[in-house]
Length: 190
Image (tube, rainbow, N blue to C red; front, side, top):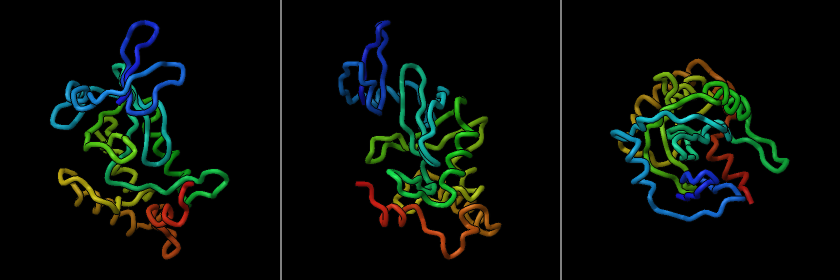
């Protein structure tokens, strides 16, 4: 966690790198800060989504706190990078997420952080779980890695099964479909 004081004297916190023009300090107050705005893991404060990076990660702001968030329990198709073509439906997944959350207020249910220091969370808009919506639309698959015990894995698997049965988005690719995990393995970022 980083913090810096802006020109108005207000402390700003982020789990992403602070603005280049701001001298900052690294702190380990993440749990303390998040406990102030959470109840049973669900952040009681609404955050505004300021950026959608791809089909399963966003940037949110509130109360001088910026968080990079990875939608837990799902894995969306990978976007291309450095001239490399992305996976089928990667743009559609990003655009759907953007349409649902951009510049909107969301609530987060937190599950810790990942190795990139992103906050792992279920994202809710108007009471609807966006993670599950992406699965149901076939724009993501259930994440194949380790999942927290508290996450309702059965509901995630059920949404994916429904999308598969109806051949939604990625599932219409049939045998040519590659999971994002496999795609990342075959296309490592250098």
